[in-house]
Image 1: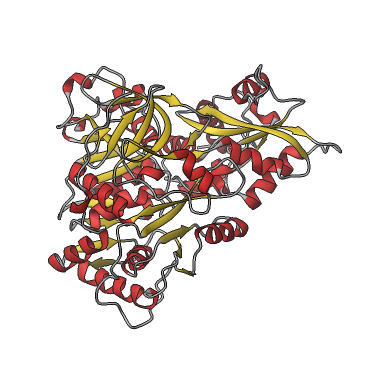
Image 2: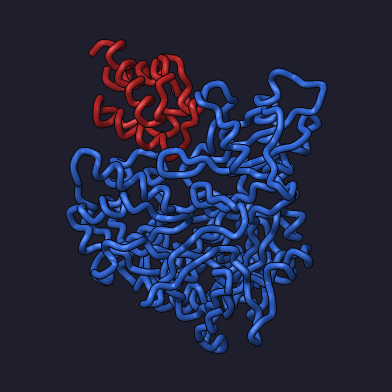
Length: 502
Length: 77
């Protein structure tokens, strides 16, 4: 086992809301956020935030926030934090039952948004909080059909945003594209470094159209300097930029951050041939929801990359300054330091299983296997469990299986990942329970679409006579897939994907 | 340009993106295993080969080669 790396002193960490207030007062006239309808200066955003916070101050329960990509949702997010309460993003497109379960599991006292609720009086100064106060509660995929909440304390988000802002050199003059959905923690990598350092956050509908020529023109038109993209989307961007011979990146871009899953060597090789790529920082990142945004990063290419790295395997990075890193004897990456979640609210056993006291501090077991290279960067070497990454979002096969088995027509289910293009989609195999109906696959997709968020709905459900098991009797998901994967896709039942690019 | 040529072009694009030999004029992109990321490749191909800049929203409304061809013709007219 490796010895733990050093971490910064957590008493140095300034709260994120204090940082935003300081920045807004230092740069009142700079543009803070721009969307398709309007733009607001830092002074105007501060005013909006204080008006959102006013009526929320007092209670300490988390606040559900209905999300959209807009100035208003940013003001609602910062307003909730200013009131000393936790942000719980609620995707309005999720099925009602799922939204209700999320609000219940997070213990939300009320729900606001997506537009501003303009109720006086406004709050002059942020409600004073401790570092342990929850900043946000998000949901990750668990092994049961119920949503699994993760609570992130104020200290954790402050430490991670500090490290990220330094890593990416964010400051006045930067234009940061807000690409991630406000339902996932990746959005904080864009919003918080930008708005605590005087940069402009940009929402633009052309970013989410799925058409790269539009995307690239938008980057150019908006003068975007910093892009934070899911690796799966970056793969497609590289395909598009190189399909008819390499085309240049927009001049304004100086940094492209990727993360969410393994970067493909072929796409990395193609990226390096793009005109202008040598002046753009390409930064790979790694992190878990439970360890707050990003814990590891490395410049893969561009002005700060180690030239010796070009030919080798693609690393996930080295620990950021606030991160304590331990590598277990089995290669498991274990994380300590101030950026740890407080745990899974309402799930003490699960919390105790993954958050463990060792070496005098709390540590999170990532279940990711890694190997350290001589210069300290880590290579990702797979999972210690069957968890999948689907367009950058974690999916536990057990959660989808539990949702399938909740249907009366299903006796057993196995869920795994299937490579399509450069990324992974979910495929499901089910054993039917009598009386057997011909349209079970289609019925299950209807059932899941009504009860589960889109990222937990398989691309395909195949009815099979039996599932494969290991010699010890455990469900063998990969083997089931190998035995039963349809040779020709149309024989299985398919579903439409989420209506947006994540 | 005749509609048939556009339909044929879309069938070739679907086949290449989905790596499938089973694409017909009425095959639904999403039912053949397409998703929002693979859709970007179809949209790029439409823009490159025929000109119109369609979006993911258009593909959801017109997910087959024949429906897409109609949409492209409308855009071109």
